[in-house]
Image 1 (cartoon, rainbow, N blue to C red):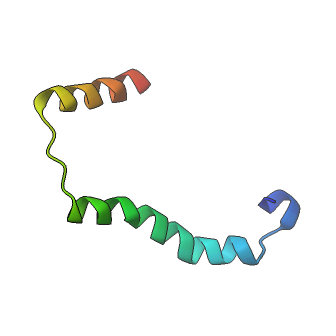
Image 2 (cartoon, helix red, strand yellow):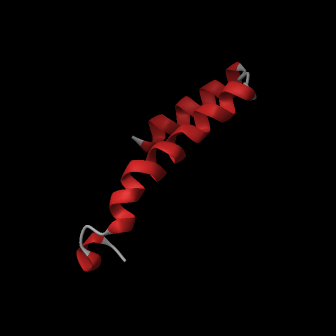
Length: 54
């Protein structure tokens, strides 16, 4: 259910306070403990896909 059918209920209020900070920090925590070294071809590929998305 969404806010349109359920209103601002328990799951939405608790999710905003707990789940969102937890989920958004997982990627940073992973990269802290397992750093990834990107070479020039990978960097150019990522920038190219990003530019294509725009």
